[in-house]
Amino acid sequence: MSPDHSLARISVIEYYLPSTKLTNEQLHIAFPEWSVDKIMEKVGISSRSIAAPDEFTSDLAVAAARQLFEKNKIRPADIEYLILCTQSPDHFLPTTACLVHERLQLPTSAGAIDVNQGCSGFVYGIGLAKGLIASGDVNKVLLITAETYSRFLHPSDKGNRSIFGDGAAAVLVSSANKGAGIGPMIHGTDGAGAGNLIVKNGALRFPKTADQSLMEDNERNPFNDNYLFMNGTEIFNFTLESVPGLVRNILKKNQLQQDDIDLFIFHQANKFMLEYLRKKIKIPPERFFISMEYSGNTVSSTIPIAMKHALLEGKIKAGSKVLIAGFGVGYSWGGTILYY
Image (cartoon, rainbow, N blue to C red):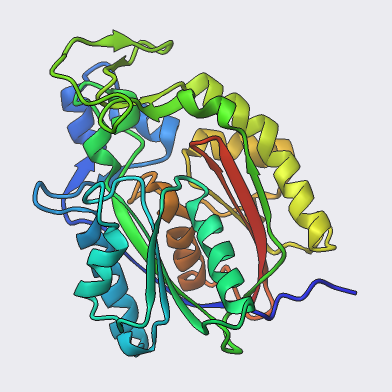
């Protein structure tokens, strides 16, 4: 018997990117040793959206949700639960979800929670939404992924500044019989890799310090414990070890073969990593979707943003089976198949 994927569906997707852009030309001026062509070749990104000084995660989240409501004629009063995925909240407390709930004027009967998850956050979020709907307690869940990682980046960190952008995406997950059915899901965690992608200072264990001295990572990128540190080599190795197995397990749990999948959409980490994965897993280029040139790595929002572009470009059609896979900070990973 085939797994049931009709309990919960993703019906619509919208996203929001801040208007300020960081282009490769601007990065070249800051770091003359990196040419515009070299940056594009390395990461596959020509510009990234950067939140304005007075623009925070809740602002991005609200903007994405309002687009979802207005473009798809969705009433805020019909939302029964809000899940907000972010690692750059407005405050330690209250949850950013509560702030967004109030600004969107969702009903007071609707739940609202933050999920502190990164590159796999969209997958984890739809899994939680699916579980809520399968329980019978709610029928419509608003899932928002929103991130302002640019605030974690040291101005001298050319590696991470070339990759990360700010943005938010909003999706409606519901019990309605339209949209993409969410298949059985795979999740995974390995906290042993936590230190390889981390903002060490700023919370309670290690408060932010006044120290502005810089260290260098193994790729000669300067960093400071008050800012984001990424061990690129270890993250790359983790990805190559975990993602092929993740894909196999998703297919097995959904009782499908790789050739049954019409489109693969992975977390849009960077072009070099994605192409390496595609070749390692033996996915044909025409069935592998990359969409990050004008947004950058928006962490938990990369998959829904790519899904939206794939829909607009006709890469996803009625009857398509789309495998999505998120992986990264934590370490954490997860994936499923969406049935259109």
